[in-house]
Amino acid sequence: MKKEKVKKEKAIKEKPVKMKKTGQAKEKHIKEARAKNKKHRKKYVPEKALFGHADDYYVYRMNFVEKGLGALMGFGTGFFVCMVFFRSILFSVIAGGLLAVPGIAKYRNYLKEKRMQNLLFQFRDMMESLSASYSAGKNTQGAFQDACADLISIYGEKADIVHELKLMVSGLYNGQNIDDMLSNFALRSHLDDIESFATIFEVTNRYGGNLKKVVGETRQIINEKIETEMEIRTLLTANKNDLNIMILMPVVLMLMLGGMGDMSIVQNTPVNVVIKLTALALFGGAYYMGRKIVDIRI
Image (cartoon, rainbow, N blue to C red; front, side, top):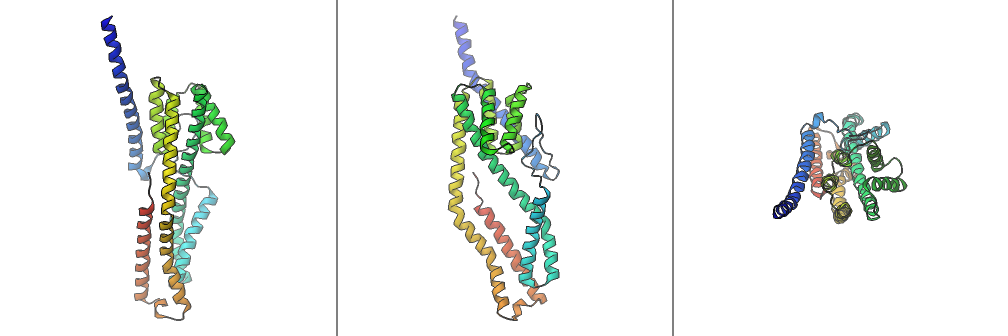
C-alpha cells in the first residue's frame, strides 16, 4: 500500500513537469517553423492548412483593383512631389512610374497588417463565445460549433475567423485532432496570442485541465493587450500628426516659393537639382525613422 501511494504521489508531481515540457516543445516547434520561413523570406513558402483550404496570413494576395489602387497611390505621390520640386512633366512621370511598384508593396503591407489586426479582434470574440459555451457545460466540438454560429452572426460568412472555425468543425467531424488544427491555425496566423493559446489549449486538453479557465484567462489577456495598444495609439496620435506635417512642409514651402515668382531655387540648375534630391532623401529618411519610433507594438 505504501509503495502504491508513493508511486501515485510521484506521478502527480511529474505530471505538471511533463505538461510544461510538452507545451515548451510545441511552442519551440512553432517558433522554429516561423524563423525558418522568415530566414528564407525571398523564397517564402506559405504554410498549408492541415485540413481543407486556408490562407497563410503572412502572405496577402491582392486583387486587380487593390493592385491598381496601390500603383495609383505610388504614381500620384511621385508625380506630385517631383512636379512641385522640379516642374518637369517628363521627370515627374518617370518618378511616378518608379514609385508605382513600391506603392503596390506598401499598400499590400498595409492591407496585410489590417487583416491580421482584424483577425486578432475576431479571435478575441471567438474566445468569448468559447468561454460562454464551456461555462454552459458544452464539450469541445459543441463549443466550436456554437462559436462558429455566433461569429457568422457578427462578421458574416466571409470573415477569416469564420472560415477557420468552419474548417475546425468539419475537421472534427472527419476525425481530425482539434489540437493539431489549432496549432496549424496559429502557425499560419503569425500572431503570438493565437500561438500561445494553441500551445496552452493542447496541453490542457491532452492532460484533462480546466478548459473553461484557460479560455477565459486567454480572452482576458487578449482584451488587456488590445486595450493597452489602443491607449498607446491614442497617446501617439499627436506625434504621428506632427510627423505627417513635417513630411508635408517641404512640399508646402516649395509651393509657396514657386508662387512668389521666378526665383533661383525654382530653376533646375545642376546645383539646385543635387540640393533638391539631397533634401528629399533627408526628409524621406527622417520620415522613415520617425515611423519606426512611433510604431510601438506589444
